[in-house]
Length: 128
Image 1 (cartoon, rainbow, N blue to C red):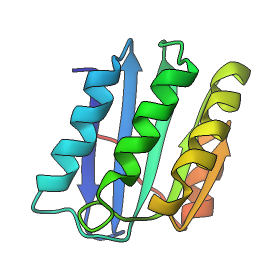
Image 2 (cartoon, helix red, strand yellow; image 1 turned 90 degrees about the vertical axis):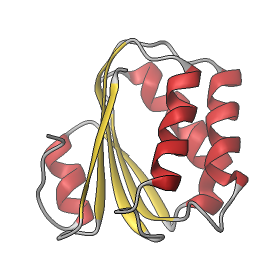
Image 3 (cartoon, one colour; image 1 turned 90 degrees about the horizontal axis):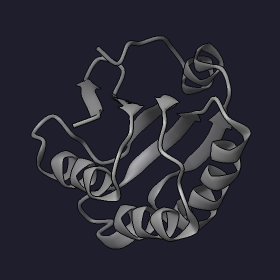
Image 4 (tube, one colour; image 1 turned 60 degrees about the horizontal axis):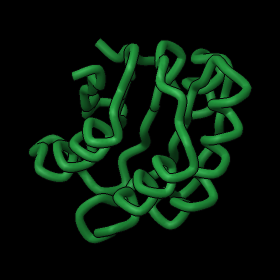
């Protein structure tokens, strides 16, 4: 799988990194894994680092991921989400994800710089 995450209990944060190509099934599986992870607590902030993601997302994939993020808000409910991207195309597509999934997050910001994203979330951290 090209999606790696860890939960940092000390910062109450989910740190996710996507590497290379990723399928929509892998993205949906990530939500499923989080929903059963014993370290996950509703309301956790999240950093989604897509700077090494090579997948070109389309509208249908964005809609599917947003639908999963909001499907069961009693199981998966997040605090703030910082998304880090490297490309303009991905930046635009993730603005659509933000609009479609805003009920799952208290706030979402998209960044081009990981350090700025971490600062916005209120601290530092590593995805590994």
